[in-house]
Length: 345
Ligand code: NCD
Ligand code: ZN
Image (cartoon, rainbow, N blue to C red):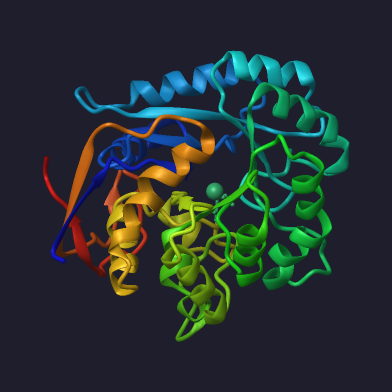
């Protein structure tokens, strides 16, 4: 197959950042995604309805004329979040709340320190029809970074999913065979997103032959057996898995640093890289459900009406991008060849 047309996809996990960076990130995602779940980990984080409304306006102000794109807003949970905050966020159009364990990742210092203390808030979310999006890693100092996702499942996720059957839970950016198995065997209120980098790469791509900071993200890339399990999960066609790029830009100097930030800026090539993975797996017929059906179906939102076409044509990503303010960013897969290309409309 050299060409594939699918219903317009959405990105169910996206970091657009704020300020001048929106001029870069919003058009980059809107080029192929009609909607995206917007991560709330700004500084300060999006913790109430006013902040959420203002952030949505700043995103839409960065959308070029003639491009359509709907930001699906999320609220950042803290141990101070109340039932009233949840109801106000729902009234402001939020579709979900994001749970970061404190210290798990970029801008998560203000996040949740005691998870069970949030259980009353989860009740309200379930009643209001808001989804719970979870960064599923424990943060205990003594737990090895490669085990943090597996241990989060055992310690917390299992309990949340069974205790709140009315609460839809998305296990975000899964990285392990343990997570894929847990989601597949789990109840209908549980689903997961999978990033392009976790399908394409494993920890060798991060560490062999020198540290590759642009392949560093959280949860960190795992060993190749886990990568294979994720590839099998999407190949299976299970409706419990869907597209979430976790595109997460950082300035070049903050990635190429003695203490480099986590996050891959994949918006420039995400849909094309997913197509490449599904093609490699001989599963291009499963791409449309993963990218365009399973997400809206799980969220209870309508599927998109338009279509995009991808053609099998090689192109090379730029080595770096210069933003309007002169700052530099290195896109995921910089300087590398991609075998699929989004066709012009
Ligand atoms: C994300 C970021 O930079 O905001 N980084 C990442 O490595 N994925 C945060 C996150 O999703 O963990
Ligand atoms: Zn993320």
